[in-house]
Image (cartoon, rainbow, N blue to C red; front, side, top):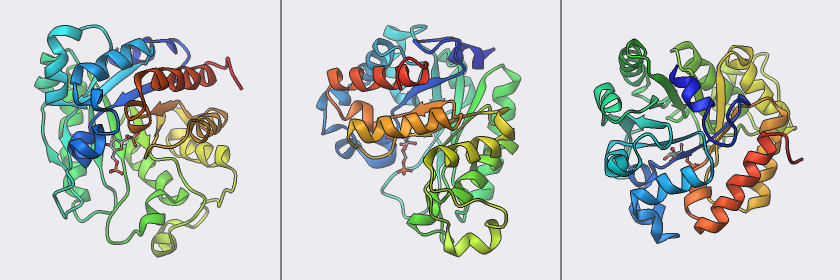
Length: 284
Ligand code: FBP
């Protein structure tokens, strides 16, 4: 029922496509690095308003951000409580559990969000934490959104987004029971270090849409929802081209943070509107 809330909200309601605003970068990257490019973004209310006014499907954030907007925005847009968090003052590839399923219920959230880092030294602990929290969330009717970001000693920077690794990480998120799977856009390269273990039968795809299609296929052939993150701030044309390829490859949408809130509100509304038009099939 709560997946339906996310799919039936905003300008893309009823299309099976979605655009979500995630704002956990303050935790993951630090406040100035995240919000100084657009200082309005230091205010948690700014993000609620941006997501609502852009007609997005949902807004995802850590506990404090959602609590700071709860009194004003309760019921205005589906929310996803990010229940674990990393930070840039750590040297380990790990996440701390920073919120609970009861917090999500108290705040009226539609889903919990959880990050796993497949390939990190802590991957099994993270997967086991996810198993517990996902079971608890499902028992009370909440949806489970998994950020599956490969990283660790076996992978260089190229390997973290290589198509074979990205599809593998997405598949594991599906196997742990995620309803919505979030990965970074896969790149054409393969991970040389990990290749011998994962590459057999994986395609090398120079075509971006075919890469997105391969990740969707790896998530139970489209029986799970797959969304792709936006990454570091980049030009609108580059982002919209990526969205066109996601749409063409059968991806379910985008979850875009920095490329939304690091722009002025006006520019962000324009960009998010253009993305929605592509997913709605109203623009090529
Ligand atoms: P962006 O659109 O800003 O890339 O957000 C997506 C996201 O998954 C955030 O939810 C998260 O804070 C960030 O990327 C983490 O990125 P990384 O792990 O590469 O630092």
